[in-house]
Length: 231
Image 1 (cartoon, rainbow, N blue to C red):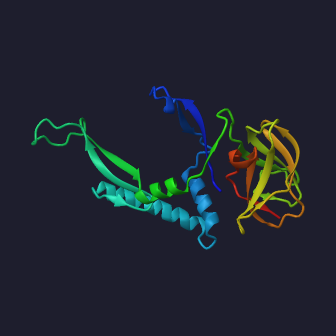
Image 2: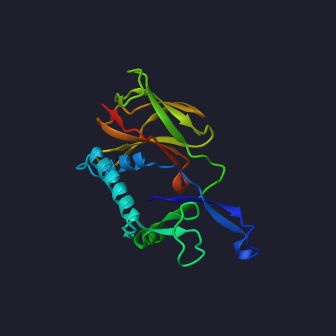
Image 3: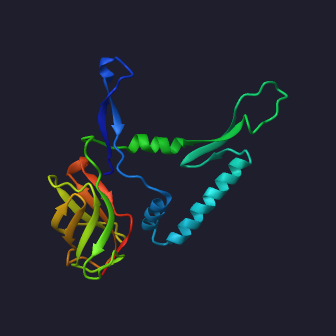
C-alpha cells in the first residue's frame, strides 16, 4: 500500500494544547512531466510512450487555448478558469496591461480531493531521514551506463543518501508483470554508490530499479527514472 510520510513540527500559530504540533509531509521525490509519461507508459502496454507524449502536449494546448478564450474547464483531475486582477477606478475604466493582469486559477477537482481523502495512508518518519536518489547505473561488463545490462552482471548504482547504518535493499520492478523482484546482492555501500550484482535467475525484460532504505511503512524509496533493459 502506498504511504504518505510525515513528521511533526512545533506549531507556533496557536496556543491550543491539543494543536501544539502540526504535521508536515516529507516529500519523497519530485516528478516532472517526462517522469509522469514514463510511469503512464508502464501502466498500459498497448499505448506507446510517443502516443502519451502527443496526448499530453495536445491536452496542454487545448487547456491553454480554452482558458485564453475565457472558458471554465472541469476534468477528473482539476478545475481551471481565469480571473482579472487589479482595481478599476470607475465602471468605464478599461483594462490596462500596466495595471491589470489575467491570472489562471487551478484547483483539484472534487473527485480527486475525495479520492485522496478516502484512500490516503500515512506513516510517521524521522524528519532527518533523506530519500535515496539514483542518478546513474554503471555496467562493468559493457563499460556503459545502460540502458542494457546483463543478467547476473556487476553494476554500480550512483547517487546519494545511501546509508551505511540502516537496512538497504534494491528492488527491480518488471515492466511486463508489475511485480517486484529482490535478490540483488549488495557487495559494497558508500553514501554515494552501491556496488551490487544482479540476480542470475532474473528473467530478461524491462525493469525499474528502486532503492529501499528502512523497513515497513516508513521505508524511503528512491526510483531510477531510466528503464533498464536486462538480458
